Figure 1 (cartoon, one colour):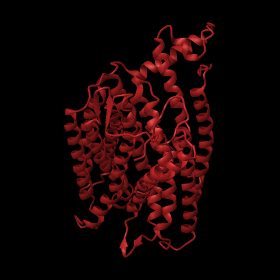
Figure 2 (cartoon, rainbow, N blue to C red):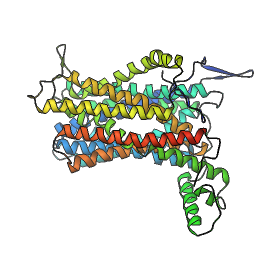
Figure 3 (cartoon, one colour):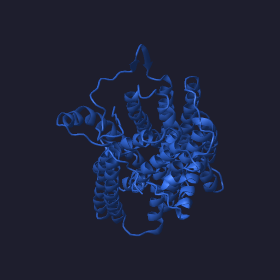
Figure 4 (cartoon, rainbow, N blue to C red):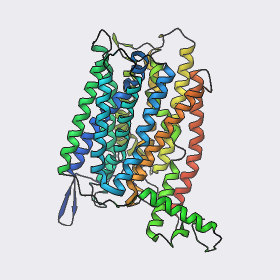
Length: 502
């Protein structure tokens, strides 16, 4: 699988070097095996991703066709659901890093998660009154649970490795994590629509109680796998203080001291806080800010990625989905994304990367993120041109295969942006702030969903095709800003002089 190995001071390959790796690491006479606990983390993540993304797969059509809301309102509800799912990692990260650790945090939020699943399943049965409000409440519980465990699960798996001895295995872990995550996503694009369309209940051709009941069972299985893994998880040592509040306090004190007029000739503005906070903590905050600010141009990418479940699904409903005599459900067309990703990863690892390696070409992870952003921008150019053809053609005449180029480019974006970006966030984070910085990566996703809500709600353009082109232009602009910031960061890491300038 794709491996991304980051070292702090050099321009690095996207994949790990050709150094031979195995499932065991020799340290003197001691053998360090690949942690068994990670297997439970990955299996639980696979099942949990299948359940949560199964909701995303069918939610837009469920709201439109079963609860009879408009497409625009269905889009807004979906992306608000995604917003909470991506914003809540910060709460789980604070609880994990500052107070009770990842295992206890995940256990707590799994309970909240379960209440949401029970509510969604119960409200899917036909009743003579509107259930839109209890459905939204159930979705809120699910989003909060799903989001709050997200950063904790990622960090929990990574913390099972002994560093630096198992740095290669840690690099593989992030690829394994994404493989498990996308395997769940792939099945979530196939299984729920198939259950819905092939099961009839209560006089309806689409049986959503069967869909949500199946997904709930998958969720509870994920919970049981995680609980069994408690026998193997390493003991954690949380900071026993609110890291986020302490970081904010450090920055606040530094600003106040600097504005007080005292001229201490500090090299960095955060150095003004060393009279109250220890030097190492101040250095950690500097690193946290340096990495987190790199994420600022990225929300538009997440806004584009999230539209596989909304605007691209509605686009598929306007197309011919017959393939070899079989009618593909519109929300099953999204399975093209994971299929392309599973194909691109080995092609990159076993074909493209070896050629680049022989030519002495190495890609820094931040450069990889920029490449992924550009690929994503082109995906929306393709979807825009496709939408123009749909708008100028009779309904359902264009074949669904014409969505393939946009999915391929978007998955290239995942290959080059999401996988290296997530590991970069973890490996570059100070030891006491790994879950917090990982959570900030996911918070970008939340902001991206708010961008979709804003553009959908305010109707800046009348045509869907024009909206796609707007996203592409915004992505190109964001990548220009990101590339400038990334180059500055890389230069600061390889510079022999202090990098923290005022």
